[in-house]
Length: 147
Image (spheres, rainbow, N blue to C red):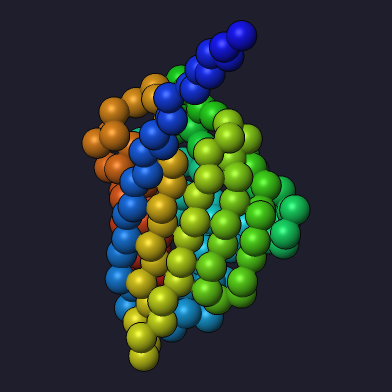
């Protein structure tokens, strides 16, 4: 008697990385990145969008919710997930409610801080659109904290 072994092909998960260098010390960057009163000021990809609500329980197994919507009210969504690991001033890892992983690293260099975000791509939008959207949010953050 023979046994037939069937293996499913490995699913390749695409990741995208975006980054920016900010002219601010890591302590200020961390505060502006994690406090809800700051998140609502920068967490959107274009000027015709906004982030009217941010809830953030920044700890392992803590949850977050950031509401993003068009300023004209025509569309919006909740960006939600759970923190897997938080290393203050260095690294945040979370799992989005849609099952994708995100890692954010904070690298200090004197009075500058580089933020690097790596996230698993979803299959609804092009990789370029996702990269551009996440990079635009980082650019908004840089503009907000440096102003």
